[in-house]
Length: 434
Image (tube, rainbow, N blue to C red; front, side, top):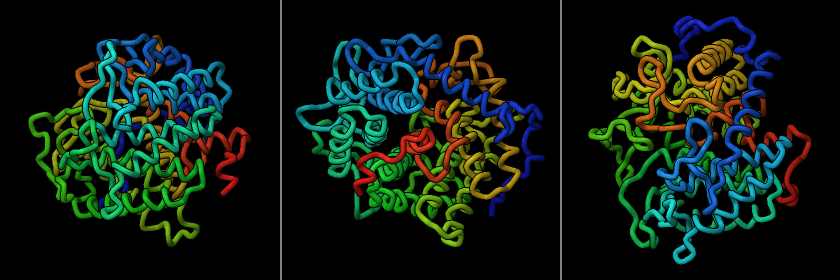
């Protein structure tokens, strides 16, 4: 069984206090990144409604259209910015909410388009991935006091519950046609991962514990699949939830559904599992199985992915024996590595996780942060040079922004609710009413 690698197995990290978890220098470094992100992305709203895909300089790339998931992510980010008192954030949140109630919403059939072209043509289909982010954005907008946040959340949950949540399986289905009349046979864990994140956020923001129970049902199955596959998580399934380990062999570097195992997802699941365990159970004995599973997922991911080809960084994907397939480094994997290493340190007290945090933080500072232009580079090659074959530009802020906050907030609580509490704003009226 995989065990957590000691830091001696990781690339050496500098002793610079800038990278040390809990050190005041690291707090200041992360805070500077937090507000730098908010400065960089504030031009995201398009005239048509919704968020544009950001270029390297923070301008909008019209060729990428108006992505609903990016609109949701940016709404979520600036909702947190509003809770932090960032000037103008509330107005940006409302621009996002208005788009989700407007041009990105399918008024005829319900739900949200995956995207709308620059000319206003909606993309066909209805995806769970998109709708999970609508739920997340709406819950954060509600917490931030947006006047339409609660209505958007109610609407998003109603659609998700009707079309995407399969209560019999305890998992979310993936993709419908535009009219919600034909369900694609593909089932995937990327959408379920973000559904888990959204469910935990809803439970924390509203007090509706049935959504935390849903998150736990998904997590139980993910742990079972991973444990039976040497802690490499199968990502792709058929309609009977039988794993398809050969899926996308001809498109190995897909943005959302790559072939093989994705170490970054193992890391991201490890944090969500730990968050669930800390929030769901009061006793260490009840938490232990989940936190041990999270440790195994983290250990497998860094063993397979970190410096696997001789250079620092996490490779994007591996095969089912742990050998690198796509060697590129994606920024989101390091953002999640910061989140998970700090969360596991908080949950276990094991120094190796703080050491890994320092290693990851040093890598981020040296390779991912654009110290001249702002934000983080989204994709590097095997030699840690900036490229844009999968993720051109700096599309949005979500992963990197959260990684500047999660390490310094309550690991049992979703980040928007944690920030609201940390800033002394207490629970929402909805949560208090329950």
